[in-house]
Image (cartoon, rainbow, N blue to C red; front, side):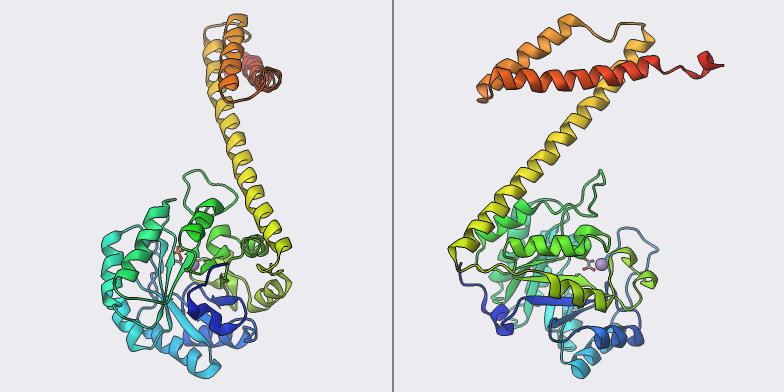
Amino acid sequence: MNEKNNWIKEFNQPLAIAGPCSAESEKQMMEIAERIDKTLVQVFRAGIWKPRTKPNCFEGVGAIGLNWLKKVKDEFGFKIATEVANANHVKLALDYDVDYLWIGARSTVNPFTVQEIAEALRDTEKVVLVKNPVNPDLDLWIGAIERLQGQNIQKLGAIHRGFSTYKKTKYRNNPQWQIALDFMDKMPDVPMICDPSHICGNREGIFEVSQQAYNFEYDGLMIETHSHPDEAWSDAKQQIPPERLTEILRKIELRKSDDEDALYHMNLARLRNEIDENDQSILESIAQRMSISNKIGELKKEHNVAVFQPERWKQIRENSVKQGEKLGLSEEFIDKLIRAIHQESIQHQNLIMNKKNHLQSE
Ligand code: PEP
Ligand code: MN
């Protein structure tokens, strides 16, 4: 494994960043810090300025929250972290001696913003972390790191928080692991941290996604943690209590990178992940095909045309076999596959045909 940026080595254990999505009050911050296990977590996070998708939501307490972060640092010995989205945030965060500054997913998409932040941080000794952009664009993510490097910022890291999708999946932000793995291949010196909270959008998936990240040899985790998650002012559904965080961090199995067996497991995990992402897109494609076929069913019904059209089926089968041949797939396999898909389609259309419309049923 390549030499990682040195800052991450100082802990001699995987990096864990925890704390609330948003700073809400001094009492909330102190209670969370008190309950977080100091032997497992080194960095306390809290959002001070919150980039919300829609207006009229809670947009963060603002600069006053920096006093509370500082107090957490002084009383509990954590390093402290917050998100910065412009040069003024950077100035304030540096005034309060914030140790880790991160660029949020909505800022990474904008090169002007990243450049402004990078220039405000020029020559800094602080750790600067870059979340992946909201859209699945590897170059934009790498570009942000390069802008920081261009301002002589040495202690860098990346945070994988998943990517927005229009259609909702089981994740709030689809992990698309392959993009983060490609990032790691291209920038082997930049540590990779996983943010399972924003990937999952719920509490239930946090352990599984964290374990997956360690299977891929990530360097750390950032997990949103709140003393009373249900009452949180932002991202209530995904925050976990500090005691649950301790359980998760204790349960995760670390993968060693220095023996052949571990390398085998990592390669296997990477390839299996590629297969899983592939299977998912095959199924999504088939579901999309069925919904087009349902529309055809409606049309056939309107025009009183039979569902099964032998000529059309022959044409579909022939085209698929031809295409399959070019792709190195046997005729026998294509025949089975396309027949099964076509039969499912016919079944869908039959259901539509047999559905009585409102007038008929009266
Ligand atoms: C956050 O960490 O609270 C946050 C706003 O994250 P992201 O930029 O990943 O949406
Ligand atoms: Mn959040």
